[in-house]
Length: 198
Image (cartoon, rainbow, N blue to C red):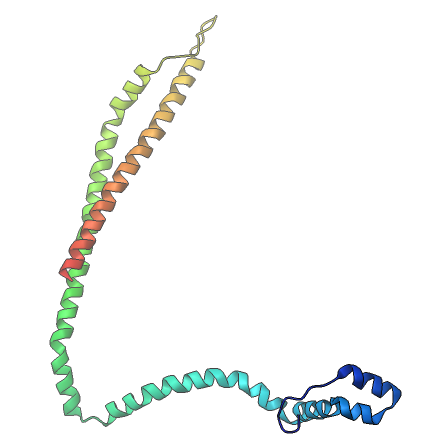
């Protein structure tokens, strides 16, 4: 341990030797060298060990800063005329990118408006046909509840209303599913158009 090497320690022999007061066996066990090394570490080198953990992120920061600083220094040392020339060379590409971005935004906004209008028209068309559907569902339903005696209309009305409610829920669910697939196709076509223009 004194030479920072790897030494084997016989802890069992060291314990017996220490209990029996056998100094030679205790020295041969290697425990004294271990205790001495631990004492030195805990009193003198513990601070170094604590510094290792915060030093790791500092090394990463140092690497990133080392990559950025030379570029910044080179840019600061570049003459203004050279920087202006670089900007003028890059300006057409920047304007093209900005125009492309604006065109993509306009295309997407137009597609969103179209989807909104189509959704409103489809909803209006569906609701306009709801009256005929209600009449058809009511006429097609075979009443299971009898009028009884004396005749009672309320159970029959309740049965028909429940039947129509179920038909409405089923119809609206199917309509939502169909329209959702259609609007997904429209949205996908809008994305393809925007991508092709980009």
